[in-house]
Image (cartoon, rainbow, N blue to C red; front, side):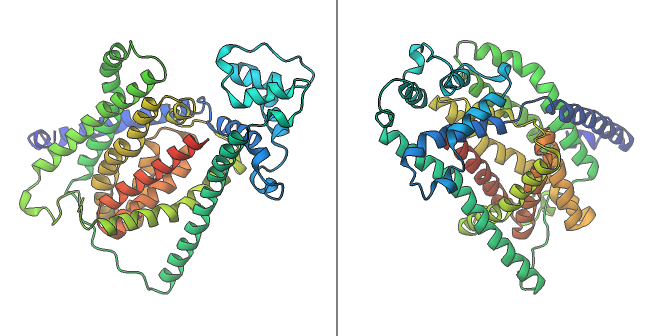
Length: 420
């Protein structure tokens, strides 16, 4: 696309970029507004945590219950289920509500619920027998470990990250930080970037490709059962949507003079040395985590839960199929970091930094990265995450640490969902 655009008049190229920018702005604005109507994953996460707390309660020492469980998990789960919309409850949640309400007779269970440990326990406790006999020590112990991992590990990450961030701030105030390398990247113009991001990433990938790909994907996955069908659809759609932007970028880089390419290539992958890339990725992930968590907490405190969570999170929470989870994990941990970092930190960030300086380029690229996820509820936290990813790219002079940090962030999030 870049080579052909060089053969047309600059006015035509500017007009094409302006049209792409206008359409992309309309698509993003419409998508952000539509995201307000998408349900938030927070209520599902809260219910999962409360169910886990109730299962784990017998195995948690009384001295640790205020820390790990908070209040009475039975009352908390009952109140959460009663507060939820009846139309929004699934069959299992409706059954749990009936079992927790002591003024109702025990319902008749279908065979599919007989293997559910929480439903089994609640049904057993409604029988005229010893409540202690309803406790499965192995189930309670496993739930306690899962609860500890899901609660204490994020807390530990925030504490360690805050300490590292404080050390970095002190070192910066004392001018003891290592100087950042000169920013190297593709010699693209702003018009090229608009055609790449607005034209390729948004208009073609997010609108044009699904119109063609969705019917083909639907026919291909017609014989699969849920949730495998949804997981295969996610992988194929994401892979196909990435192709136009990557093709445009490949054509743009191919048109650049090879003699002017910096050492390490236009995108500055610089695969070696691996230890430095890994340590930079882990350090960046630790330091950005407390800032993202604080941003999300402040957002909820100020405006409440805005909703609009990534649909992929709901798919992970609702799936127990190993193949489906593997495909969803592949998309989140491998495909998304590779594609998004190539576009936003590989191509976009260096051009913006050279034009508007490090601060301007980092913030603008992070904002565009957050908007590309088309979720108004995640806009602020993803902007902070994008700033962290961009700072790792700028401070190391390499793209690989940003990819690894992005993959680590998604992997930890994915594993936390699996634990719940």
